[in-house]
Image 1 (cartoon, rainbow, N blue to C red):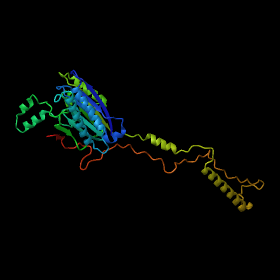
Image 2: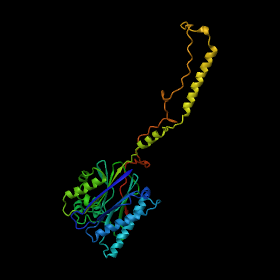
Image 3: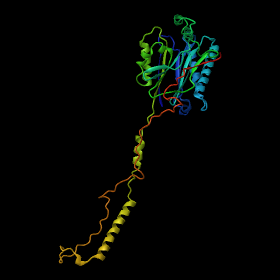
Image 4: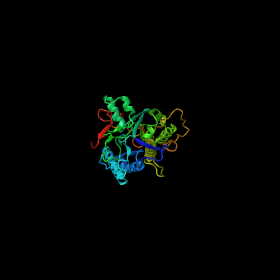
Amino acid sequence: MKLIPGNAQHIGSRQQQQDAFGFSNLSNEAFRKHGGMLAVVADGMGGMAHGEIAARTALKTFLDSYQAKAETESIPDALLRSLHAANAAVFQQALTMGAAEDMGTTLVAAALWENQMFWISAGDSGIFLYRDEEFTQANGSHVFATDLDEKASQGMISREDALAHPEREALTSFLGMERLALIDRNLRPFFLREKDVVLLASDGLFKTLSFAGMMEAMEGDAQLLSEALVSRALAAEKPYQDNITVVAIRAEAERVSLAAPVESARASSVRPATGRPRPWMAMMLLAAALVAAGGYIYYMFSYDPGSRHPSDRADQPAQPIREGTAFDPAATPPVQRQPGQDPVTPPAAERETAPEPEGKDALEPPTEKPRHEEQGR
């Protein structure tokens, strides 16, 4: 599976850009064989001090920690280790700056290896899959609204009160806490299909545009659609527009061209010309000479003058016997055949396909809900 990344970002109507994003080292082929491609988006919390520093600290620490992944470490384990390292770094930075409990950031990360996706998140930034003109959010949002809606479904509060609660959008988990409260991640791989788009975004995008509005920008490659999404969000002219960050990765099937190898194979089957006679030509010349000599000897021993045809006149000498004509390769070129068997017609290019998990369609996402892990409770 070929993975093509793109990204776009805008400050919105805010005074500072508190979003940060990044990728793992895409040129490190040795690492990609076991670590895949990593994409990260961090959204510094706008209502808190030093959100920009928190986002950049979390991003750098997460990328560095994941880059230290060993071949024997699983991708989910590496993501979890990197998230805890990033949280510890932001918390320590807050203590150093005297901003404990006033400094934090959300973080979402997706690691794409071959045709599999693993993700992890804390906060309310989003990880989405765009497939067959539909969006699906992979991770859950760690906001107080989740708790309010659960209480409303159990009849503990009214639906109206849950929707009108002033702290409905308050975060319940983020990086910068002494211990993370909630983490969302998947342990089973999410299988990607050709033309799937994995989208990581800060809430400045999807709290401005609906899925229907986002869908209108999903044409073109990953870079074009990232820029189109940001442009559409800005065109909505939402008051107090938050920072917008979009990271997109489009999955494409690998296609291998077989034209060059076939051309080379056929060319190599033709032998270069040389000045020396070829063995088969010498054999044919020798065979022709032997046939001619045998005919001459047979004629000389079996010739009877009385058996001449009536049309032959006695006063005319007999016609001389013609010598056998040697094989002239210039007059009758031999049929050239490829050595061994005929050239092999190349098979049609095959697409890579993923191994299917037992009892599951490998191209379908797992049916289990996003995993919510409580930490330190």
